[in-house]
Amino acid sequence: MKKILKIIILALFLLILFSGLAFYYWTQQTYEPTSTLAKLVDEDEIMYYNDWLIFESKSEEQTKGGIILYPGARVEPEAYSYYGQELSKHGYLVAIPNVRFSLPILEVDKAEEIIDKYASLENWFIGGHSLGGVAAASYAIDHLDVITGVFFLGSFPSENINFSNTSVPILTLFADQDRLTTLDKIDGSSNLLSDNTVMKEIRGGNHSQFGVYGKQQGDGEATISVIEQQHIVIESILEWVNNE
Image (cartoon, rainbow, N blue to C red; front, side, top):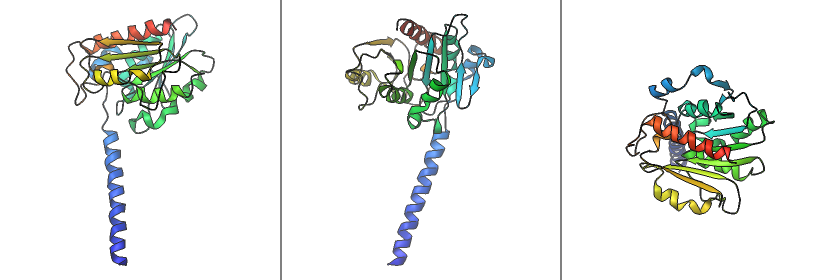
């Protein structure tokens, strides 16, 4: 009996060990920026602070506010650096975190590090791509006294995050060729958004091109270039934040 018990305990230990190793291996298989990004972003413009990529305002005027962008699951934060470079030219501080195991949902409160560092800024917008948007929404719902607005890039809040009883400004950008965050999922979660929500469809765009990291497995084929989609996102975010 004792021998059988030892075998069971050993088997459970090995199962947990190999499951942990498999999970760790999976999280390390990240999507990295493609060569296209090197043509778009001047690496000298990126400032690294602890686990953050930071783009400080390039405007001669006072910084208008901060924009925090959580990356998608297993996507390197540099894949979103074109947003940081371009939005910072228009007076905004942009911060993109490098999160534990490349899973933003594990570090929902990561935003506090940057908000504390730049405490003088009054307007904070937080959002993210895919799972990053879910994490950003989770942070925002508990910090509506600090967060000015929430944005989703091919993303939506989880069922337990409900903004419908709030007046928080929300921007939802989705793409018609996105086969990961589908139009049905966007429609199905619309009841969780506030009445102060702007929704915009990117015709010809897909899930992967919300970043610059190549095509993600299972995604649809985009009919516009990644640069075109990135520009649409940048222009949409700027129009939205400037109106809040």
